[in-house]
Amino acid sequence: MSDAQGDGLVSDVRFASGDGPPDAPDSSRKEPPILVSACLAGLATTHSGVAKPNRKVMELVRQGRAILVCPEQLGGLPTPRPAAEIVGEASGASVLDGEGRVVNTSGEDVTANYLRGAREALKAARLAGSTMAILKARSPSCGKDRIHDGTFSDVLRDGSGVTAELLRREGLEILSEDDLEGRDL
Image (tube, rainbow, N blue to C red; front, side, top):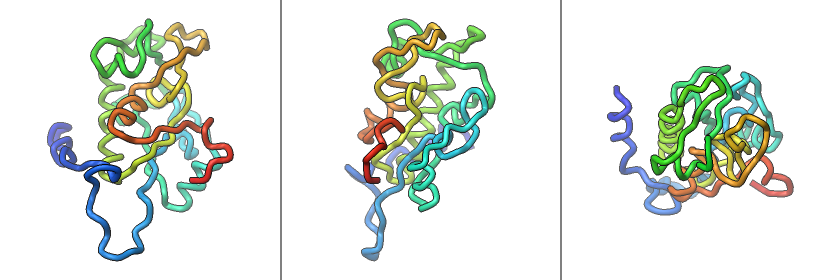
């Protein structure tokens, strides 16, 4: 099955906050699962091939309340892989709008991989009925408020990653692991 055929299978699925899937026949239906960055759940999916486990995210997984995604892997990139950043003054929003690029440390343009991964993460969220995502802070894919500035110098700037922006545009509440302290999920 091609990507386009898979897109068609979920094209009419909407989020629970809007035209979500019908309610379960009984009243035991739980809240929809939360979409989470796989690295926060303890999987070694970061560009360097390590995990970034977060206690609260791992508890959601243990409770069966999480859907794990790694947008970079879903976009076809290997693990480990060269680090990538959104370059110039761009952000996830401008990448989605066709005005920004994601480039790795080897100088390779990986924008198409990031866009595909964001679309695949959105499909997973729609299929699960997720209304919230907990994503890895500062990532060019998952970063929520701050991302690296595109110079590979560990300097941060305001902006969101490609997946975080797409999910936000589609109505999901976006959190990072930095937002979880003191928050009930």
